[in-house]
Image 1 (cartoon, helix red, strand yellow):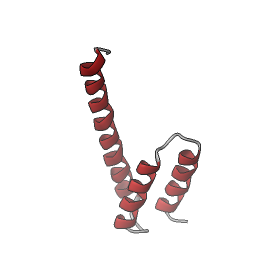
Image 2 (image 1 turned 135 degrees about the horizontal axis):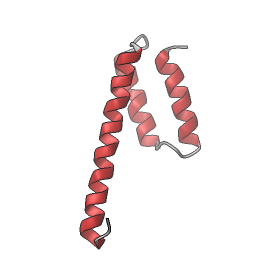
Image 3 (image 1 turned 90 degrees about the horizontal axis):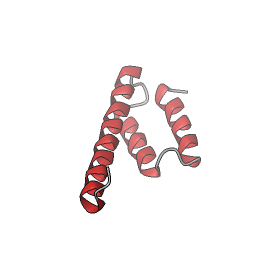
Length: 73
């Protein structure tokens, strides 16, 4: 199996048990398809890193909005 295939299999298992959203799973599957089945570990890791960055921005935004809504840290 390809590097991407192994990763996606593990990602799907994590999604089924609730550790990863279906949106994240679908987004990474799409990104990996764009990169191709023979993409290097480095290229795949960069795509995962970009997804992590996206999710961290979302979390930071939600924290900021929560703070402004109810004054919680």
